[in-house]
Amino acid sequence: MNKIDLLNLIDITVSFEGFLALNKLNLNLKKGELRAVIGPNGAGKTTFLDVITGKVKPTKGEVIFKGKSLVGKREHKIARLGVGRKFQSPRIFENLTVRENLEISVSTPKSPLNLINKSIKDEQLNEIEHLMKIVNLAQKVDSKAGSLSHGQKQWLEIAMLVGQKPDLMLVDEPVAGLTDEETDLTADLLKSLSGENTVVVIDHDMEFIRRLDSNVSVLNQGTVLCEGTMETIQKDQKVIDVYLGRPEV
Amino acid sequence: MSLSKIKFDKKIVLSFWIILIALIIAAPTLLPVFRLNLLGRYLSLSIVALGVDLIWGYTGLLSLGQGIFFALGGYCAAMYLQINSSSEFPNNIPEFFALYGVEKLPFFWEPFRSSAFTFFAIWIIPALVAGLIGFLVFRNRIKGVYFSILTQASLLVFFNFFNGQQKLINGTNGLKTDVTQLFGQMVGSDSLQRIFFWITAIIVIAAWFFAKWVVKGRFGNILIGIRDDEPRVRFTGYNPVIFKTIIFSIAGGLAGISGALYTVQSGIVSPQFMTVPFSIEMVIWVAVGGRGTLLGAILGAVFINYAKSLVSEALPASWMFIQGGLFILVVTALPEGVLGWIQGDGPRNLLQRFGLRRKIETYPSLEVNNKEGINE
Ligand SMILES: Nc1ncnc2c1ncn2[C@@H]1O[C@H](COP(=O)(O)OP(=O)(O)O)[C@@H](O)[C@H]1O
Ligand SMILES: [Mg+2]
Image: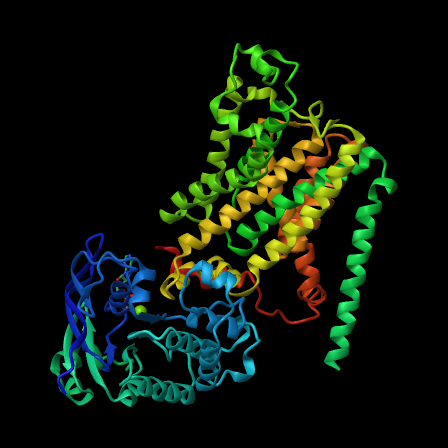
């Protein structure tokens, strides 16, 4: 049962002109783990993903992924090392079709030469078929991604994330704007991905987090307030004070 | 059902090509020499427009400096012609050198004695210069308006540099080609001009197919991805710097070919090829024709320039206003350009404009969705 750590964040501090978006944040992820990260608006959840994916360079601290430091590496290099990301608002290529979006995500190697003079490999085509079934977009393959509903866009982006075959999947607010039914389906989908993949899910929606049935890290003011199962954190007084006790939840 | 549709389409395509080829072959007999020459020039301009469409229409890089690469191609061609037509001049070098007391061909012009070298130099040199400028700019993540300003600034640097180099390239006067010799004939002669027209027509078609090949498939989709959401492309594991450098370099190469063909058909290359308005016009041709539609770039370049010459003959000095008005009209009423409008939901959009149909989400919404990536 002793699984090695896939990711260690060590004392990460991010300062935006003096404002500490992250403040000595520590977080460790085991291989195959599903981890939920919750926290009030502005807690630093998105910034925490920005640090891992290379969009934001930490002012202090270390990001160790598969035993190697990610700090200072460029975004596409980090992506190629096996870190995939789904953005808070759906970020898909709206002027491309569903299939073309998925082609971009599954294609390897990601060099211009490979893309321009080779056609896509059969196994990658199969992968695309498979992905489209998982996220229920098989009928929409040749539609422009921009014409999809909000929920379908969210799913397409999740499918693109899976197609990238990352070792670590970072999923930022995947159920924002989804119906209850879609939310449940998304939770099940993400759960089914863990085990084989390591997945970090950020969200506000407590019902959704509960359904994930995973360990939860609570972020507040740029630092991890508390970590544990849903039951543990619900009983934690600090968490109740800053987050759970607030009227909007 | 669908099978007959494909056959039908094929027939149309085939007849289109037959008519086109017939027109190209017949053009020299149908048109007076003067008009034929104009058409040849405008066709050569459509090649630089194809490049603008690749970098701007597909990749979102609004370059206002394509005149640099256009002029480089022109200078390569012109100097080759001058060097190889200078046997009666002092020191067997182009005549203008004597004016500035230059007795020996500057070393970097030496290779241009060779036609094989020149053939490659015309497109490879502009492509390399574009690649170098592009790489430095893209690596430093300069984009959007800053990229446009930087390309325009580079254009001004080249313009001023070329104007000042009398001893190397005859400065402001430029290099004339019409009185030079090629294959024992005068470049400005009717017979050679006719051949240049045909060559240009063939190269336009070849360049069009090449551009279609570049944008089709996954490579082209990455370009569109970079245009619409560059950070997303990066987080998917692609390095946009390489893709942008390649496409900018390709556009530079196309500009060079365009400039060379334009030079031999207009009889001179000079730093005037690198004025600010000319490079902006290239963008206007593509905007009016339809960015992101390769055919639109070709048609835009040819038709706008033809209109320009007709209007300038009838009402000199009014062209600038008409061109400006055309641009404003297209940007406001047909943001996808004329061909983009026809190919897209043109008629439906027209109904929308009159409130007869509900609005659908289209292209411009993308810029809004991109907000998240802008502040990096
Ligand atoms: N690029 C930036 N410059 C300045 N402040 C930022 C920047 N990005 C995020 N912040 C600030 O950092 C804090 C954390 O933001 P974020 O990570 O987006 O929070 P969350 O995703 O938890 O809602 C917020 O107060 C936000 O305003
Ligand atoms: Mg956030």
